[in-house]
Length: 294
Image 1: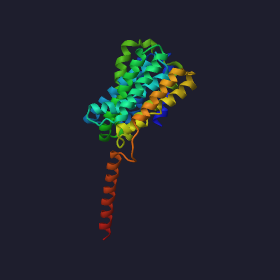
Image 2: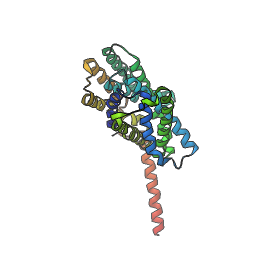
Image 3: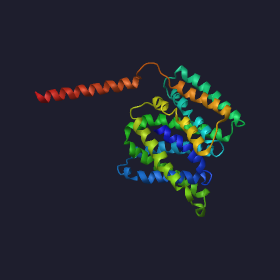
Image 4: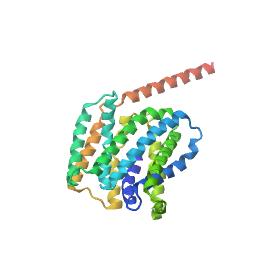
């Protein structure tokens, strides 16, 4: 579900940028999400505020880089570059002591080839591609941090703090750059509501909930289909085509993301630990029930 929602966001953001400045779009989008999530801020504490501010700040930078990149490159090209976060998660994990599997290096090589082919079709690696690559790095960093932070807090409370942090930073960015007389959304209100209520809230909440049990590298696997959905929706909404070289590059990137997450065996260590913990709890409850019936 998250990948489908994200897939729709690329063409909608691209289309909305035609009439609304990036800073204004960011402020309104995250403002809608923040207001909707306000009821879950009642039990806020210092630790939740600190963790939410960290995640919200990273998510704001990631979203802003991706949005600025969309001003100069197509929505489908942006989606395939952002999907590199699937490979970047284990690469960044290696820097903090996690094991780096051999297929990650193979996948990284394929991904570099894919970006090169896509950029070649567009006349070289431009500012838009570099900003979008920075967005992918931001996504990978966010996923890794969320793996450690999500189990500490309520998913909705953590999502609410992140939304407010992104909204406040967005306001600080928008006010100096957009005159008040230009503050008008016109017929873009439905798109802004969708971006704020669905594209922003749903994925952040789903990630915060899911990564209580799913490690970052496995969560990243679920995001591999995002650029495929983005390409479909971009063709549907914007009539965008990747072109021959673009399609080859996209295929290499998609192949790289799948290879990077391939694992032999039926269960990961995390799954085995979770199974053992569940078995232990079940045994304890069974003993308590037997003892109470004696």
